[in-house]
Image 1 (spheres, one colour):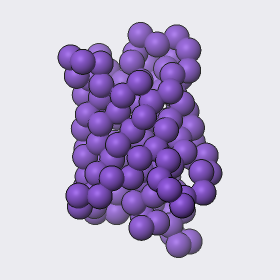
Image 2 (image 1 turned 180 degrees about the horizontal axis):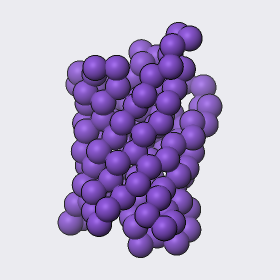
Image 3 (image 1 turned 120 degrees about the vertical axis):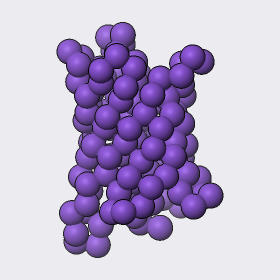
Length: 119
């Protein structure tokens, strides 16, 4: 469960046209289970950075910093988290959809899931 929370906490995506911080609701799915979170992300000069908090019941909402880059509509976001004293790298890859949402895959420690993000 902590691996999933650590992975879910790092998802943050926004549009390259954004000039200010935006709030995104993220729904990552691993093995059929949803691990919702909320992220605030600022996009500037081809980079993105922000803070995410898990939204799942019973999870202490500690902020997790995340950063990444974008090229046109391709999104790559990476962050590192501590999992039981071990440092893991979590990577997200997503594409902007016609409806304004973002969807893609998340990978961490050999586990892969999917996500969608909406404003």
